Length: 398
Image 1: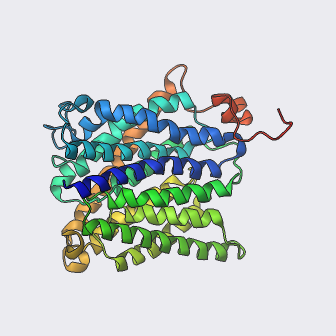
Image 2: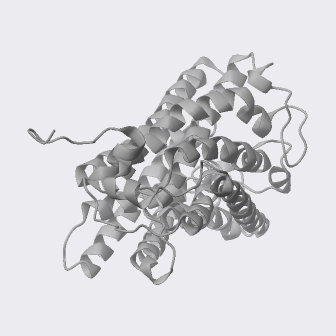
Image 3: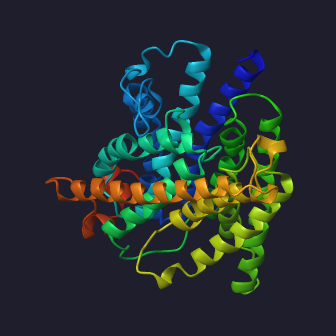
């Protein structure tokens, strides 16, 4: 790796790290005042805990030398043997993905999930769900990698994986007792802006080089996010009495970013515009009609990230062009990539759902843990019951 690429990958890694505080603000603004600290802490604690887990055994389970098609090895435990700048940069960059992916799940169960149980869930999920799927898709030994499935920056590994785990968590933890409106829209917009900025590192860095593919990934990332935002705003005004929702604009941008993630290294700007329109419509109506299903995915993790990832991976199979990323999609006469990517979607969906359900069910029956906070804790707010802190204290109130 040349010095320019090394510099770019260090910056890209820092940008992806910055996304997790962005997610914390985005989610924190969507919940009630009494749960802002709790919701932000779900994401923030992942910075510390997942960094340590990744260094010790997460990396080697995902990318360890001598693994098979399904799992890595323990050859690189505690990053043993990861000594060259190229290997270390790859481990650093991948660590940032491992930090944010489980934090995405928390949008499904915020305002009612026990924090101490969440800490254990983080460790188990990254070990038994995230690391294996990352190995399947991104390791040269992985069975999906060998079949030819393409996921440039995490449509399956990050977004479908987290979105499906969110379904499992929401189903087991149950509905919120007293859901409310977003308490801090400026937090939501700030968080979305931080995510949008960091996403350029997320996608443009995934080629692991400062080259033309990185430039294309940067451009299509912004284009798809912008188009999806516009679609969300337009549909929001149609269904919202002519009001221009800040939360809707922010959510639409995130949906577009999730969608372009797997495709960003393989598709053109024109395809990014098309994908932005498609995902804007699909994710908007998935959120709009979510109350028709008996599942309380509180902050729409599956609708935005899960469906966004699915649209993006299918879109890669359709719109990939050899000129951009060396792969041919359906528009260039090849159906094989689309078929392999559909197999990747199904495999990720099934494994993540089953494995996440097993982990959560085990945690729910362990004495002293359990998934759900008590009614008294929820009424007081998880900020006080779990953290002993408040997001805001008015003068004279305490």
